[in-house]
Amino acid sequence: MNQYSRLILLGALLLPLADGWSAPVWHELNGTERTLLAPYADRWDTLPAEQRDRLHKGAQRWQAMDPAQRDQARQRFEQWQTMSPEQQGRIRERYEEFRRLPPAQQEGIRQRQQWYRQLPPQQQQDLRRRWQESEPGQRPTSREHGERPNRQGGSDPLMQRRGGGGMGGGGRR
Image (cartoon, rainbow, N blue to C red; front, side, top):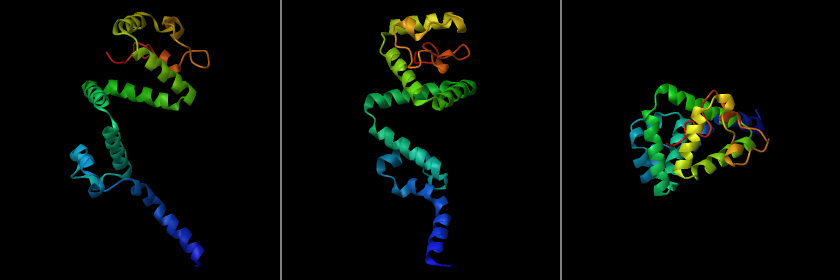
């Protein structure tokens, strides 16, 4: 076997280990990361590399957040914990649907969500009430709320789902 063949074989053998290189072992975490990930300390090094990597990246995002962002994340987590498994499942499904949308549609939804969150609480409440009181086919469109339609000129699929979602669906209350 020549040297070139050995390198290819070695690369093929080591390729499955490449995922593990991005996921640190416990002693490689800094003090803050260890504190944040303490619930996993006893089993950290036995977790799959992709799970360690996800948790590590989450800890890094947490460290980069300002206090207001951390508070908001805590509130969302607490809200998530109070949801039934069915509610959590619906949210996961909607998130996966969102991720499958083209980037332009995702951006349109993000912009409408940002627009909605900047409305005064009373106006948010009025829009939510109008949305919930109307039939799915008769629900107000973003155009009726004085908002820009999406780039395709229609409404987003996630905004028109099975009687839920949109401006009054599962948003913050």
